[in-house]
Image (cartoon, rainbow, N blue to C red; front, side, top):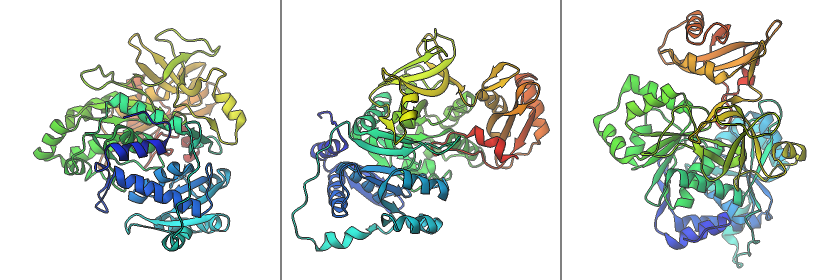
Length: 518
């Protein structure tokens, strides 16, 4: 199949080459979508946007749960030449209001649930822009264009031409230290990100993925939705993750791969310890599932090995950023070598490590991870200063991640520049503390962070979430960490909390932990 420059070209080509093949399955509503139906939905939705005076480059916001029509809207808007603005449904009304305003969105598509959860936000939006209700369960999109389209007999309007450099997605980062930044991704960017996923995991038209992550998540949008689209495969999309039905859904819908974040990995392990899996499920996983992948946050080597041993499936650790249209690094599939604790090698883009002077580091030396490729963002929307700070003159992206590269070209992430703990002049990686605490049998999740200290400058603290039914006190965990890490690196205090604060990609927001405990 010829290579596509835009989402429109890709959808048209897939409809031409495999019209009857299933692209999407939504189990909750028992619906499926073929590639021919995807094209029809995209064309119909494009006409709807034109009737609502949405032109090429206009922003279309989405405050939606996972579902059939969510995918149709997302891909249909990009097909039309509009720019989708996926909104993080758990971000809170003040952030959502900021995103709607800052993005210059012309339309908002919202689910009934979020209309009820954020009534003031929706009412405020409705006073400024067109708002349409999307009910995935009852198979409808209610809004201003619906009555027009039913009664209209005029010929379809011609869509504006689009090219690879035109904007396709405007997605906002989690904003842990201030207002979220709008990451503007072109058609070239998102297709490159999707192709990087397909190449790394050798996806073909015989593969069927399971996506349990929300579609406002760059991982779900690019890796699952577009990764399946570029490879000609299919995707199973439940409304949300369910620990009790995860494996049975994989077997029932005949999935060959799945995409997770480390938090979900931990939940699946904890549930399996208490509930177990049937022999039939174990056999399906062992014989039919090619791989699972983990991304969006570092995966503990201990948890990684335990997952593979318990479920008899290879778990491929990867790394991606919102700014790089998801995946940048990946471990190879078996029989390639998997290195536990590493998100792998660069696939589809260039990667290097630099020191504070901007010089490339030798192997084994930690520095900042830099990325260059067709998947790197076009710009931060309406933020020229941030764009110039992030992207060099020769198109390398500053990721802000600290990493080192070994002699086999595998990268190891050691922390974030802004999250590095500097105690008494010594650099301490929070991830090292996390993994020390995680090795305790009662700990489900752990996150270390820094607090100000009069003598050392900064001191190490940590928060943990316990496994269900586990019982341990804070002092026992502190003593355990001291034995694992030594007194200097061990947290001065360990706090047990119900849930770690996370951004939309699943990354722990360490900088919020100190505020959480005050």
